[in-house]
Image (tube, rainbow, N blue to C red; front, side, top):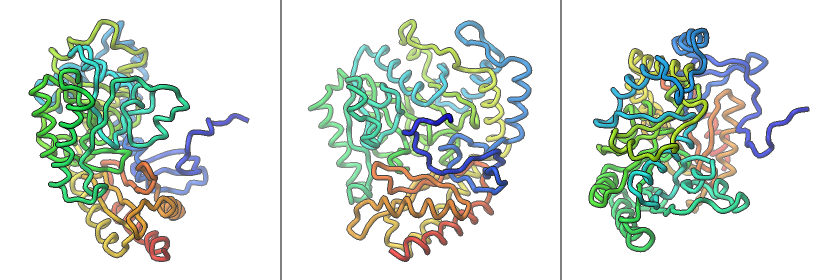
Length: 420
């Protein structure tokens, strides 16, 4: 009998046969409301008809046109569509398959272009599991386990503005984190040795913690003063997820490189980076490439995804449905002290579960997710202690579906949290 690797932690025991919109269906035909969206991947819902049709058409025309050998029309069309969503001046693209690949490409580009080695990342970051990306990831020791061998050098870690974690207000947290960033530049990496600052505008695996405009202004100022490349990792929070196309738009910042993946192609593997032509020209020959990168079917699906996001006003929907979800979660949290904080932006919301002393309540988080699954709602935990429950539905989610999820969450809280 064949087996999946035993270290692949399955969040549910479900075996599903099909998906439609916000729902997955198991082998018995039972429907489950999916508030994971494949960890933010199925942005237009499961099997959106327009995405399906675009992929089906492309399969019959050209499945794979290796973009280091030939250009194909879907690649060219996708670049034009993507550029319209990019910050001014970011008009040059490199495509890959996964978020980790794209993150590593962004770091390599920054090192090539600046001739420097060191990268500043932030406490709680998640940038991938490959060996290079794991060196950039601090959201859980399991991603950096010494059993895998030494991680690549040149990475230093600075604090991220997480008020709930520190127990301060946002102003105090910003002040501390900016001061500590300057301390990092004085003690761990001179600015002149620093190639890039790499940051998630809204941290994902750490627990859906947004940064702040004040913090981003400090990053941009230091990057400009010292010739450091500012990279925003939009893998989970981008493509409309937060009610803006890019999550960094909430913080009025202009990055030098944008990293994207997950929701860009509604489930087909596609990722990439965007930078200015001048910056991208700093990449060394042979440093960029990939056999399956910019696959023609994935590109066709990405074009259809962007069309659907625009034609169905999904960014506005993410903003409105996200607020409805947030309001409901806060109403429920007000009745249960075990929900320490509700946070996030748009359709990227999380509840951190804590004990009376404020410590992480991992067991209860597992219990509420399991109880919700029995009621037909799929959610995930995250955070270094696994005590944060995250909700990340498709951008197509309806008010009715938000209502069902909130009713289920309320029932679960009443069952699990009330008895605690």
